[in-house]
Length: 322
Image 1 (cartoon, one colour):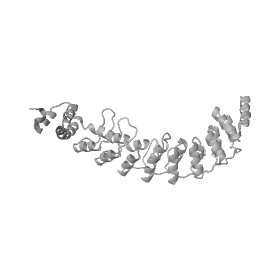
Image 2 (cartoon, helix red, strand yellow):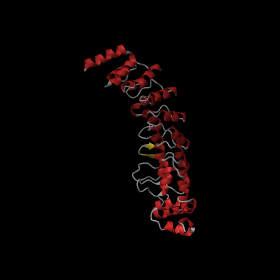
Image 3 (spheres, one colour):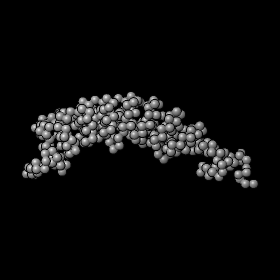
Image 4 (cartoon, helix red, strand yellow):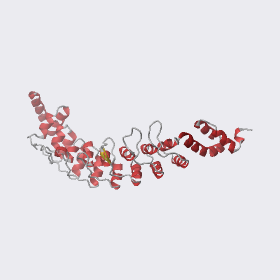
């Protein structure tokens, strides 16, 4: 008599006697009959003997049917991964599996839970990673679009991630009621987007009605704050920003671009008619600020402002003064 000729009851008894889940899985793969018989048993075994650890795997891999069966068998919805300390919900958020997120929330997962050592809950993790579909599921299940924390609102977090624009998740947040004029550390999300260079986030906020006349530290306008990224400068000018607006020091955006050696922004502002002779409260012109900049970036800006001949004269003058 072969092993596979045994009745189902004996095959289940053999599986029950195994100490290793891997051995049971290998046994289940020996034939279609064993798979059909033992697959449900494997889920129950994992829940009973391993606290439903397979739910973490299903959450990270997007295995919806596996997650459904494990939950049906009684897997703990908020158990922590032994290695990472993360809960299944956080793992599914990080892996961008919106269907798993919805399933876990429907079974009572805490949307505000964090993993061990994790600074962010589910919605902040979704925003940081630009997981728009996941964010939508969380917001549809009662998460507040206006949550605030040590880095400001969710919109502030999205706006500050310049290395990868978060416009998709920003649109979801706004759709779900996020306040586009919320203030954190004296700044709105649009101000954060401008100084961080998040041009598409800035565009999204402006097109959603964000104010263009807000002022930051030292009276800086959005255009002052945007001079690090010429694309953002172009966007603001396109939307009607005043290129001659002055901060508390009487400096225009052209002054700011020159002082920081932002040649592209300076050149664009000049093309738009910015006043090269504008003087700050202390009498400085944009050209002087460019020349005073410590480093070659400032001299490059001076060259673009007034031509190579004047650049050489200014550079020689500064050399004499030193």
